[in-house]
Length: 167
View 1 (cartoon, rainbow, N blue to C red):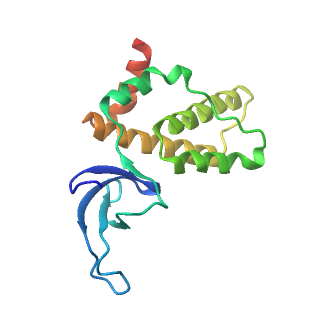
View 2 (cartoon, one colour; view 1 turned 45 degrees about the horizontal axis):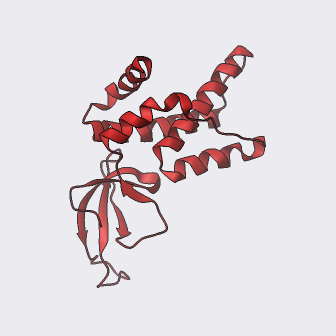
C-alpha cells in the first residue's frame, strides 16, 4: 500500500500525488472500501479515484534515482521496437505507453527518433501519430525523472543527454 503524499505512476494519468486514502462518500460507492485519491501532476484541476486493491490499472512507485542512472547508462543498449506490420504500429505504441515502464518508454522514443531521421533522409515528414506518441512517451518519462531526481522539468532532457555523452 502507498502512503498519503507519495508520488506514483497511475496508468494513463501518469505521475500522480496521493492526496488522500479514504472511503468515498459518493452514491454507489461501497462504504467499506478504501480508495486512493490521486492528483495528476500535469492536470491541476483533476482528481482520480481508484480502489486501493485495484489490479486493472498499473499503479507503481516512481523509479528511484539509482534506477534512473542505471537506465540512462543502458540507453545505448535499449532496443528499438520491432513493428512487423504497419497496421499494428499504433497498437504497439499504445502498449508501450500503457505498460508505464520507463525502459519501454525509452524504447518507443528511440524507435520514433530513428524513424524520424530515416524519413527526413527520404525527404518525408514524421506522421502525426508518431509525433503524438513521441511527445506522450517523452512527457511521461520527463515528468517521472523530474520528480525522482528533484530537478526542474525543463532540465531533464539536457540531464539525460549529458549523462549519455559522458558514459
